[in-house]
Image (cartoon, rainbow, N blue to C red; front, side):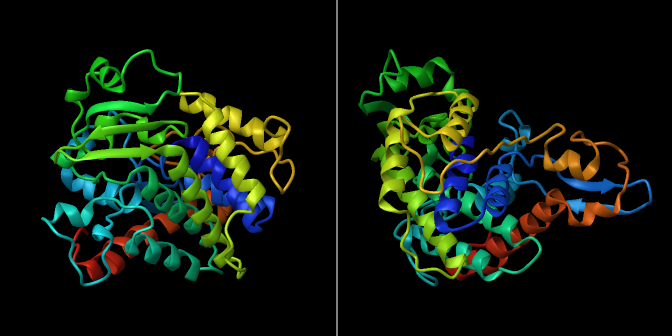
Length: 352
């Protein structure tokens, strides 16, 4: 999924679950920033203080994508959560180890992951951690069938639309060939490019094991949003009823009808929808103005460090300790530790 879902749709589901604007804004920013936190290492301050951070993503052109050791620490806990074949703790799916780490929607490890985030309620970084977990949770739908390591199972061949979106003048496989997909390593859904991320796409492909996979992205995105709403209702101590019927119907309409391929443009349209509605309809919480900036003056990073660039030394301010950027990175470290060292070992998955 891309910025439109991880930021805007997360905000919508948070509001429909019962969060106030300010809380929903923190959850939604955190959910998207998982894709934008690409720097790691020590942050040094001018008073000799320092802060150790980890990253949750690589840039698409990062050579780290070719390093399976780094993939395990990035893609497995933050983007392609192993699904253990849908089996519970102590059980093994048929096949080899790769079947244990293929991502699956709402898998037992995914349920444990969001429960751990909910159980952290009350911490200074609890909303940030919830947003991080919801990013990973949502991606179990869009990234299903793919694994966060370089492996043949991630191969994508003979891709084609099953229902024309009107957005492509040629078969999807030819689109992939035009983009030189064979030079892209079979990591995650890299060989499928952004096809799993487009809310309106109904498509099919054959994976590296020769299995035909059908994907109705709209249906998957609706299921993800509803499940996220239930998690947030659980956090708030409410009945887990999921999205109200009218909000669910409006989400589905937007997913199907908003046919924009480019991520930033689609996200921009979503910001307008949250404020003004879509084709005369608004979400049940009414109108809201939201925005997202991964870098620059409005970014959490620049507000915390004085610059969104990684400097040799940053000016320290007492407000840093309570900054959203620092709290996000606190939560990021706890999330990775919990997934790799507490949850996955229960399923016989050693990846940390």
